[in-house]
Amino acid sequence: MKQRPSTSSAPISVEAGSPTLPAKARRRGSVRRGLLVFLGIAPLLVIGGGTSLALRFLRQSMSDDENARIVNAASLSKQLVDRVLAERSRQVALVASSPSVIAAAERGSSISRERKLPDKSIGELEAMFKATRSQQVDDGAKSFLADLETRLDIAETMVTDQYGYNAVTTAPSNDFVQSDEGWWQAAWTSGTTSAQAKYDSAAKATVVELASVVRNHDAKVGVVKVKFGLSVVDSVLAQGGAGGNALRVDLVDSTGRIIASSTRSDRFRDFSGYAALAGNDGNGVFTFGSDSLKQRGAVAAANGGRWRVVAHMSDATAGRAYYVAKWVLVLAVFGIMASSSLRFSSSAASSNAGSPARRRGWLVSHRR
Image 1 (spheres, rainbow, N blue to C red):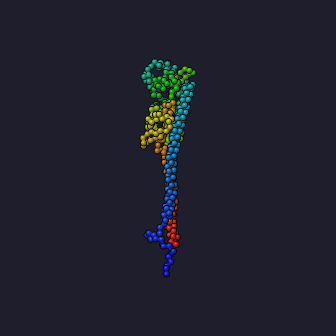
Image 2: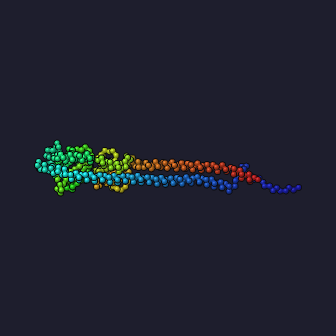
Image 3: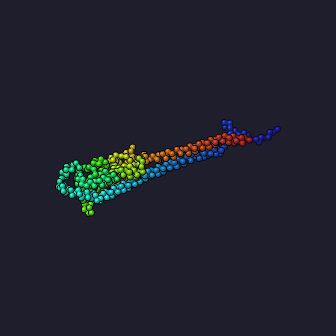
């Protein structure tokens, strides 16, 4: 009897004793894994690139803010210093026009002529008035000037006659004869002098000197010089620097010495970055100093260009706010990236865990 050929399919043979997934299924799994990797890495790259751009913008923005603060401090302090000097000049003019000062200068000239002082040499006059260095011709004028000193932060006031001899002084002067001094000649010729800062050994203090000619109507009868203290200037510099020690404002004279400062400092000490100030008036922020002590500063001319107002702070201090903000941002971004990495790992693990089950289902369906 002939056997009927069997219609049943032969079992599928597999290498290593197990069936294999078709190439299409393998490609599908590979695409899925690639997609998961891309979805995990792409956000991290976007976040990293965005963070880098944000840090650059943040650094530039905060640097510009600090630079603007320094420039504004120099500009405001310059305005305040010039305002103080203008007020001081007005006060000297008022002193020179005072009737008691005019009378003292005229009386001094009269007594000098009576004593024939103009006929004597400077050496003879200095020897004659070695003890007093002033004729002290008017006690009323002296009292008036002494009263002004307590109210206007004045260290010393002197009134000379028309010959340049001290007629009234509120404190012992270095010399009796003033007519050979540049300030006296400038005041007598031009009417006033510009503010000059100097250390006065007689007053034992750093002062700002201003002088004005004394007139009786149109006639020149003498010269008055007033030596002002610097406490008011210190105060306006502190105001211009907005307080604190991070941003410092110094007033520097034409020789590079510090006249006044927004912080406690020795007066007439050399300003270390004076050479770098040349050519930087009103030109924004510049850097000076050594690498370890690099400063960021701005300059504004004051007192008719004779002095410089310098607002400055260390470069490290200027960048401190940025570094704090930078690390806050970096830590925040790191937290976001770590969270994204954990989510990606969890998703990948779930995908891999489902793969064996799918393989077993495929094998069962193909063995039937």
